[in-house]
Image 1: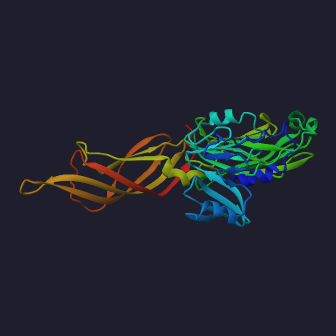
Image 2: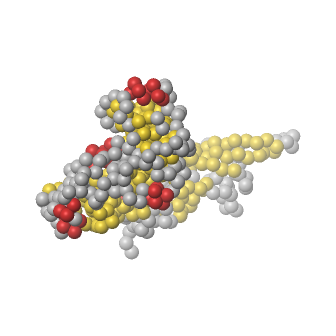
Image 3: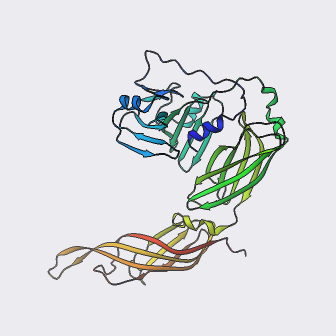
Length: 400
């Protein structure tokens, strides 16, 4: 979810528990590239116009159209490497430069634990993750951290959403809202390599700002992806409903997913929760290439090298009607008539057909190779192979 979406939704939030911590003062000992939450990176500030930004930054090395109307993302080779402009005004700044550090001391390469320790009093941290990518967004501080392989790889700032005054806190307790918070609808489906979770939540009690935590689980309980998303519209109360839809990248079969509803001002308390099984196995055919392992086998006493392939099904689903095309590249050294050795490269194409592979099973099948090449299939042949799925179906395993 882009920070701009978070800010729009955050504007609808009810008062939280405490005001945001003031931005750190810039001292004479400030680093050369100071990241000021909600304000600036270095000398480039949120809110300046396009002309002023280009005067400070110089000519961009590229630019792309963003997802919003009148949004343009400018790319630079400077420490401020990405500037997002909407309607002629700078809205977001991003850096991947090692010299840049936030006013709380977080820099490129730091861990999630370091971020949470530095912003331990921040309100409303939104965490999203998929595979090795994690995003920590602090909408009321105006900063986002992107972590790759558990380390900060990008820092982005945007205009922080101001926290309202805490005048009506007594009426916004999660306990009061919990009595009427219900997950009304919930669906999950694959679309390409993305799993889409959508639903709606109602609250018959006191209006409260709500968000959902979504966790995708494999059959063995592994967490495949997770994210958090505010409901829209927000806050929810008085018998009204809020909805959500999130797209999560996956590289494995989702067996079930868990959606937990939480209050923005008490995110550790679950107000409602639902777990749903994913029963339609056919929809995961789009990621089948990530679930198969293929190895071209060498020679044995009863077969020449490169005529058999081993296929492993790493998924919890049964694969049927599998047809693959395969191109094998191999090198060999043949002795010529004069006794000299010559290295040959042999490329051959073939087809592999498998009626069925059970979950977490391995099969060995012949390759229907076309033509002949200079390598006769010596032992010790060096192989490499590329393959492509022509057709296949995925289904739940057959019960004994």
